[in-house]
Length: 73
Image (tube, rainbow, N blue to C red; front, side):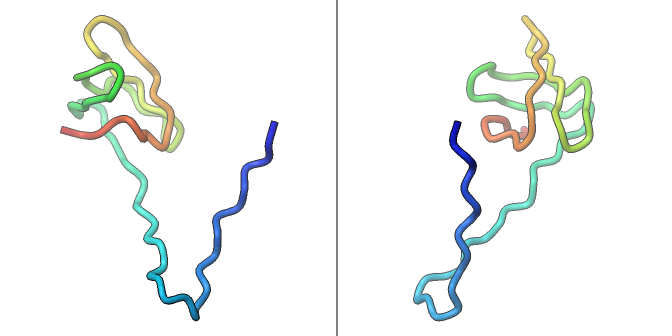
């Protein structure tokens, strides 16, 4: 296994803009969501900062943070 690398730091003398950190996605019970693999669903449970349990109709799935493939509708 490889060790995860640390984020690169921005040098003040760089001609490029510093990367902008996006705020973490937040979901609440009852939110309608879409997922790249599972499609449309509704959040039925939340584990604060860890995961969201989503009912996609045919199955319930536990989607872990940072929710890269899931977005709120």
